[in-house]
Image (spheres, rainbow, N blue to C red):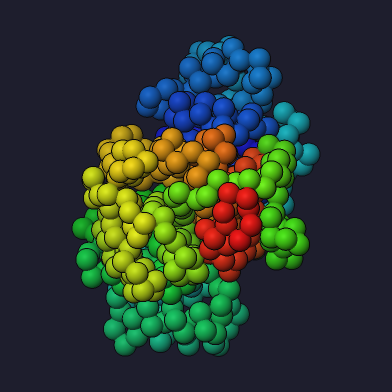
Length: 494
């Protein structure tokens, strides 16, 4: 079953989503009523929506009224989860169309009971085994706050602590492996990057989340770690009181840990790649099966890539596989702060042996252009077919993202039409879904990374379930498939 969690509070969304995932729901998130309506329009009505009351742009009460006024969502199960405790206000929410109401703060058992009452769960879910975390940081204060905050979450357990990279490796060698390592970047004796490379050599599938400062030096080391195979990273809070650091950990670190560990522990089955014998895979899902191409695909005029969690290492594998064959512009959206994107472009240039540049407004798009959207700004394809260029904007985030793959994909579809090739790689959330739909509508093509090779099968999974991907590929084959398509003429032959 599918659930949409609507709340402007990231910690609240994480808590609700965790309970729902334990009940076998696939969850997407929205930060306000407008985003929620866009999500429903793009992916179709889910099986459940949980709605916060007080949100910016459009509050939960107005969202419920709009959903109830639409025949397609009139009977959709809706649960309001809010801080309102007044009986009159609760009655108002129910009168607007909420099926049930749950007051914050709430327990996972309370939410589960509500869903059982609505017939969406047959029994309370058995509690999942806690995620075992090995914390590695040279700061005693940070280790203490991390350990205490993570241990206070019933879904987390501290498997051990280490004061540097060597101590981390020693801990891994002498006991049961944890479910995830939270690894600082800058440490004495052995730094996080060196430790990560050794972890990847010894334990290639052990999830590692880097915990790094947002200084220039910290950003450089973190990007290098991500390219080297770290699953994700979290910015280390600086200059905050201990209670503020703990709040940041609850709001960001725990969600990131759950994201990478859920991917590794969920039953992902055999590493199937979703392709037919000829490599032309067809995705099926909630949106049905995409029609098979008719053999007269238009030559590729531009490549757009959307990626998030696990993206740097994925890009480091995909780009070198096709860039030697690329004679069209390549534009990339990687969800990452502005402090990091410049360094990522530099690092990818070294890996690819070809310049990868952080985009600037007005940059011309040539056959040799490989551009990375700067953190905090949307990147669009503008101009004309003869003189395409980049446009950077500060428009509101989409899917809580800026830059957003949806923004880039839509603009590429407007200019290049059926000549657009979109690639959706590993990442949390649903960014890229709406943009992929636009690409398909104008006759373009969409490739998606498969579940087994993704760090988190959120973004590509949404595209696959909507039936928009005409090929679903393991990471090792994505770049190869792009290269093949770049070599094809209008007839579809190589």
